[in-house]
Image (cartoon, rainbow, N blue to C red; front, side, top):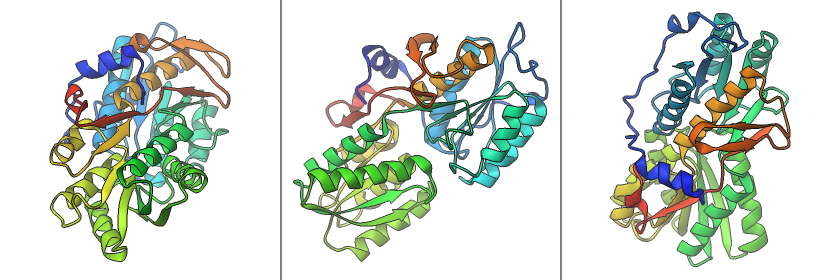
Amino acid sequence: MLFQNRRLASLAAVTLVASLGLTACGSDDEGGSSSGNGGGGDATTVTFIPKNLGNPYFDTSNAGGEKAVEEFGGEYEEVGPAEGSPDGQVTYINTATQQGRDALVISANDPDALCDAIGEARDADVKVVTFDADTNPDCRDLFINQADSAGIAKVQVEMIAEQIGDQGEIAFLSAAANATNQNEWIKLMEEEISANHPDIEVVDTVYGDDDDQTSFDRTAALLQSHPNLKGIISPTTVGIAAAARYLSTSDAKGKVALTGLGTPNQMREYVEDGTVTEFALWNPEDLGYLAAYAAKALVDGDIEGEGDSFTAGDLGDFTVDEGNTVLLGEPFRFNADNIGDFDF
């Protein structure tokens, strides 16, 4: 996204290695004490539940959440399923509710499957913030949107169009088939292509389930099934890195363009070796950071809904928009000219 100056400054200063070794910073036992669901003079307890653990993207966003919680003197924990399934998330939502946590910050694996568990949490006065991937809006208190969906879709289409001369066959390599954000972006990308890029044809959409090996295999299968393929858009950080890894050692390197959403540290080697020309993302650390401050504002009663404003630490002031959403910003393009300026 086109980060504001303050975000560009913070990005350049961040040193976050997106590794699979980052583990949860709390346990169910540690989360057993609550602050009474009201903030007040007690530490605000915040539980982050990403789509899955061991995902470099969520390692980064959760680190931002932990930083924010430490800044406002709260108690942070990260729990979640090993694989990106809604059933796994429901278990952790229920546990956090039973423990009396003040707020949950969730990246939803399904728009509807979590709603019953979230409803029980809200009935128990637990504030629920979604980020990255939303639930049905009726289920949660607030959604922290990493970027406007239309903007995310448009920038990815623009990049692939530039890279393939605005014509030819392309395919999508997505995450899970029921991932809310992925499906919304793909729908909008198809609409953008249909309206403004008549010579680009979408020939397939495949799902790597946000698993490295599955995404790698799906990339190989795409090239076998579509020998005239000119480009791949992968709007998932796991998928684009796996696809780049496959392309980098295949005969398709330099012939099949790849773009989508990725982190600089994941994609650096593939930009430097010419496998990938350009990709985009927002700052996931800022996303988690903002989500945590929004959760704190809800718990404290500083915000309730549309039109209310709050301050999110170093990121500054934000306003709750229509649908009880808060927008982080616009996508930013990473390429050989600027990727060296970022480290996350």
